[in-house]
Amino acid sequence: MTETYLEFDNVSKSFGPVEVITPTSLSIDRQQFVVFLGPSGCGKTTLMRMVGGLDTPSKGQVRLSAETVEEPDRRRGMVFQSYSSFPWLTVEENIRFGMKYRTDLTAAEKTERTHHYLGLVGLEDFAKSYPNRISGGMRQRVAIARTLAAGSEVLMMDEPFGALDALTRERLQVELRLIQAREQKTIIFVTHDVEEGVFLADRIILFSKRPARVVADIDVTAKLGTERTLETRELPAFYELRNHVLHLIRNETGDML
Ligand SMILES: Nc1ncnc2c1ncn2[C@@H]1O[C@H](COP(=O)(O)OP(=O)(O)OP(=O)(O)O)[C@@H](O)[C@H]1O
Image (spheres, protein in one colour):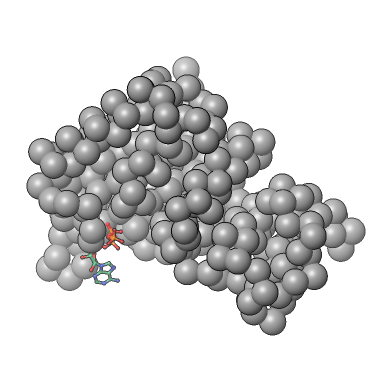
């Protein structure tokens, strides 16, 4: 039996009188790439923030490895759409900053990890550059590397590629799948982009409009396998899945994304 790694147990959320999430239960396996899709304002980010310990459920519990999530912790890291690098630090220093509070690592280990993650995201040649001197795609690579360097087991990504041009976005999607496989991370990724969701996901959770409830839980890996390349988008199975999800959105979510 596979262990339930990340669990939403009857989680609901209201902000004052506004119900944002109806009681929701979900189990997410370790190293699964899960995409949250749903209409704007339905509560996807709120659910993700609960995993980060940045929001608390009104009722129910979020558990990671059977422990209730109560506050932020370096095992759960967020990557946002807006570029969150520190402009006064170089690329290398930004990545190292992710380990600032890690007392379990020596300075030499931090240096080694910084180089490892610089290499992983392909930024060795830009180690000494400042964020305003590199492209948007590179800045998102820095954010990913910093979150990984911090030691996050779960990455929560809130439309991280939303501001990038189409080609950069496609390349980063391929890289993110490779990084996930190599680093064996669990990822929760919020997007409005159906093709991006299908391309990246092992599993898509589709939510209704607010108050959010799960309207579909789609096993993407069963149709596309785990390896995703630039050619994946040309597969008939990719089109079928994309159309299936678009159809569900039109008919089930009661809204446009
Ligand atoms: N701290 C808060 N106080 C009050 N209302 C909030 C708060 N945070 C979120 N909301 C409301 O909860 C609802 C869900 O927000 P959330 O950001 O989770 O949606 P979302 O599905 O991620 O939306 P989008 O896709 O547009 O980013 C929205 O109507 C939002 O205004």
